Image (cartoon, rainbow, N blue to C red):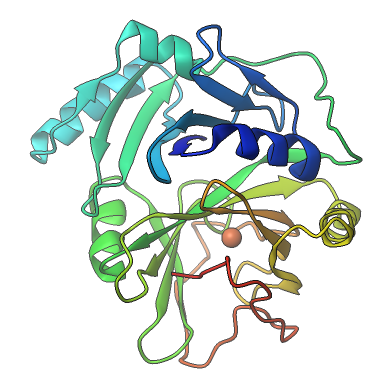
Length: 287
Ligand SMILES: [Fe+2]
């Protein structure tokens, strides 16, 4: 998975990524894109300059050219308009090929193959080990509608629903053994659908706690954590970035087996953190 987004002040975001998150950053040759390297891929996150924070794409790896061709036919059969990525865009995203379309909220989704790999070890700017990009959380107008689209059209599997209260119902879907690769929360009143957070899976509990203290002592806006989620059991810390979304450093994320897992509904009143933690900074919003 890779994620492209835009924000007004790309320089501040790049500095935050480098100095706080711990990621080496590079610019594309034309200078229009800032890449953040977090693991074995040359980048997972790509920032462009935009008038306001915007999600440009979430790119999923479908595994190969044949699979991508199958998806083209599948989407067309379901009357979903897709467009093919052009050569410049493929170069920019460091993939061989992709197609792109929108979900019911207008979130742009890309299906891609041929992701480049960087064999050089990552030179984090602080002590850190990221093992992969775990998931994204999107805010949406109607979590049931999103559930129906992602399970029905794209083949995601339902892991569970978490009911924070009678109105806020979070939906967690998987496409591999991870408990979830995508999750949905309802938009807060007056807010538009957006990228709420990106979860980076780290190698150890130490990486979570080290990140927490590093960010805390430097005054970065901690969103939540350290805490533990009730459903996926991830031990997490969230930090709000200047890009308008948060980054979650998480460890202990549960793996599920399709053959045995039955979807669960966590009842109204389920906390997002079983340790009782709460939102810690005003910039961090759940919806
Ligand atoms: Fe998360």
